[in-house]
Structure formats: C-alpha cells, structure tokens
Amino acid sequence: MDSKLTLKLNENIIERAKKYASNKNLSLSRLIENYLDSLTREQSDDFEISPFVKSISSGKSIPVEAEYKKLREEYVDSLDTKYQ
Image (cartoon, rainbow, N blue to C red):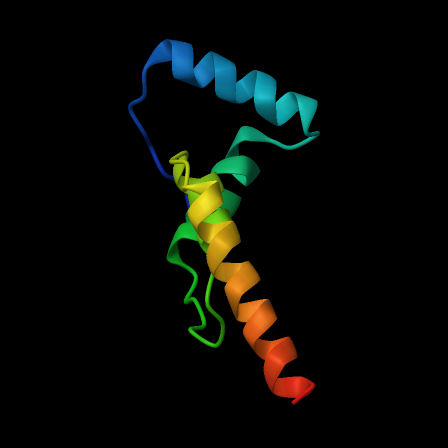
C-alpha cells in the first residue's frame, strides 16, 4: 500500500534529483523509495566487505602498497604450505 509523504528539501537538490531520476527513467518518488529501502533493508553479516570496496563507498583511499604486500605474503605462505 502506498502512502503520501511530504518532505522539505533544498530547491537545487530537488532539481538535480529530478534530472537524475529522469535520466534513469524513474519517478522521483520511486528513486527516493528505492534509496530509503536500501538504507533500511536488513543486511546479512554472512560475508565481509573488502577494504577496497569500503574505500570506494566511503571515498577514502586505502594504502595500496600495504594491502598488496599483505596479500602477496598470504599467497606465498599458501603456496609454501601447498608444496611442502
């Protein structure tokens, strides 16, 4: 069942959101509904999100070299164990 919701937003944001929704062939209501649904949907803790994906979503960079060295060491260790 759909219900009405009244929001007060900055006019510039509303205009940008309307353009975005139009480019995606969505109504503004559907766009906001999808966003709120994604925010409030229960998340499963069955898997761990990698630091790289976390950095993309947060906009923060991760030290690539440090991560690369750690992954390389783990790979080498696994090969050592496998071929002993």
